[in-house]
Image: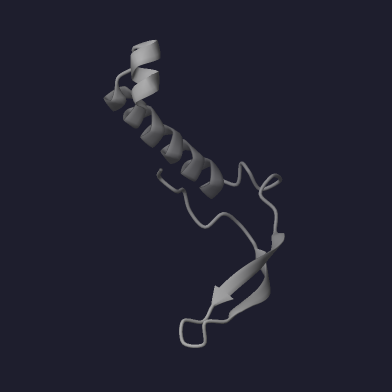
Length: 72
């Protein structure tokens, strides 16, 4: 953000406002089904660390959709 501010003269506040607006648009589009054809279930392998035994196990999971917008 600092580099963008210095290089292009876009303040941090304007960047933050744009980021919030972008997140809100994405959330609204997902709620309205705009991305239904693009957001599809995906299989992944999840690692699970057991703190007591110090062992790591792996589970196959299916992620149906993005759980939420993530701020940086």
